[in-house]
Image: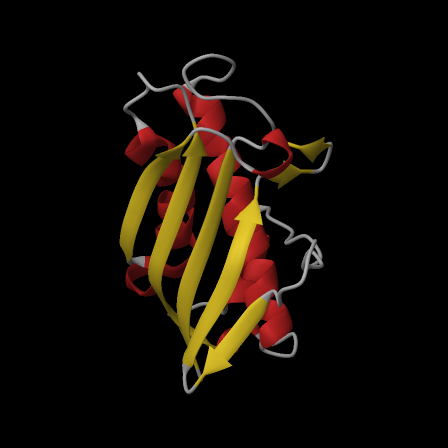
Length: 154
């Protein structure tokens, strides 16, 4: 990457949130070798949780915005795991996205694109990743989206 990740965030007008604390008996991230596994991050914006069910309460565009919010929290966890140094992030390896949706909703991939597209916009080729996008009948606290990630770090 030519520009630093912090500079790219600034150029995009994005401020990462503080890394959310775990809400139960788990850790927010685990590093094994150069692989960093980040626990699922729920959709939360500056005004609080982004809740609702895709196919009933939210449009695909609103769901994609919720997924982008999850991506910001994932990166905040990566920053925390790397001692505040995002330059240690080498690449996004995999994202697994869960979409709170009705049984007839079938655009889960378009929703999770909100996170995927942001990772590529921020990181370029290092942001391209493998991915799953699945439906869930319900998610914690009624949130619209939850995404977990695997990252390579130095």
